[in-house]
Length: 487
Ligand SMILES: [Zn+2]
Image (cartoon, rainbow, N blue to C red; front, side, top):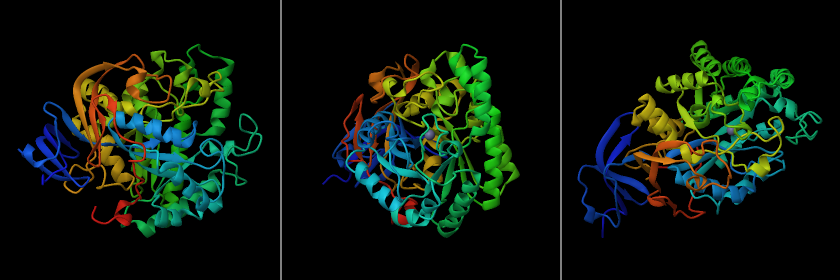
C-alpha cells in the first residue's frame, strides 16, 4: 500500500513566516503528512511534478459575497468554481438578513439552517460565514452562533443606519427588513455583546466584528456636491462623492467605540491613504485593542485614472494612483495584514443603471495570485512568503481557521495552490470561470497563474480546467480549536 494518497514533487514550497524551501509534500487522509527532501514517488498513489513552480498554502479568501445578487446555491457553485481556479481553497463569505441574499429576515435559529442547506451541495471549496446582525434579537443569538453553529465573525456596515429607515433607501423600501434603528447606538450594543462573547471564547480564538467604515451622513452631502459638478471621469466622481476623509472619520468613530467596549474589529477594505493611516493611528492610540487592517485586490490593482468605466463602481470606491501606491507601501511594511477579493458576482444586466443608481461591487477572487504576484512580487519586491501570509495564514489566524487552514505544516489540511510565477496571460473572461460577464481587469497582462489547486488532498483545478465537484466543499466551524480536535 502506498504511504501517501498524493505527492507534490520538486516544487518550491512557500512557507508563511519563513520563506521558500525546495521540498516534496506527501498527503494522506486529506492532510499534509510529510514535508521533506526527496520523498519517493513510488510511495504515492499519485504524484504531481511541481518542478520550477511555487507551492503556496491554498488562499483563504476572507471577504466574499456568495448569493448577494444571484440565486444563492447557483452563486455558491459558480463563484466557488471561480475561486478554485484562482488557488482559493476556503471562502469566508458574508451574509445578512434583508434584501438581496435570501430576501427575507427572521431569527438566525431559522435562517442559519436554511443557509447551510442552500450551501451543502453546492460549494467546490471549503467555506464558512460571517453574519450580520440587524436587530437586538439577532445580537442575542451571537453566543449560540459561536457555540453551536461555528460562526465566530460578525459584520456591521455603517451605511445601514440610513438604509433601514423606511423611505430612505433608493426605492423607498425597508432594505434590512428590521424595525431597529441600526445606528451607532445599535453598534454600541452589538460591540458590547461581541466583546462579552469574545471573553468567553478567547482561549479558542478571536470573536470579532468586521466593519465597513464609511459615513453615510457625509456621503449624502458630498454626493450631491459631485452630481452638481461632475468631472466626466465616472470613477473619479464616485471617489469624490465618497471622499477618503469620510472613511477616516468612520474609522475613528468605530475605533473609539471598539476601545470603549473591548470589541476586536476588522477594518474592512481600506481604500485610501487617509483610511489606512487612520487604521494605523487608532491601532497606536488604542494599543491594547485588536484591529485588523484589510486590503482588497481591486484597491491594490486598480485606480481611477485607468478609465475603467462605471462597471468598476464599488464601495468604498476605486481611488487615485497615489492612494493605491500608499496601500502597497502599507502591504509591504506589514501594516495591511490580509488581502481579499470582496467578490460579489454581478452581471451587467443585474448591475444596470447609471453611475449613481447601479449596484456596487464585482468579482475578482480568481485573480488573488496573479495580482499579488504581478503587482506585489514582480513590480514591488513583495517576497513570496509574504504573499502566503497575506492570502492565507493571516486571514486563517484572524478568522479562527488556523492551523487547520493557512499553515504549511504536518497535520494541516492539504490545501495547496501550485503557481507558475513567471507565466504571463492576458485576463479574459473564460479564464476567470465566473458567472460574471465582465471584469474591470479584462485585457490586463498578469503573471502568477495557478496551475493546480488542491483542496484536502483532492485536485480541484488542473491546468486550466476546474475538475472539483459541487458539494466537495465543506462548511468549516470556527474557531477550529473549539469545534475540532487535533488541529
Ligand atoms: Zn464586501
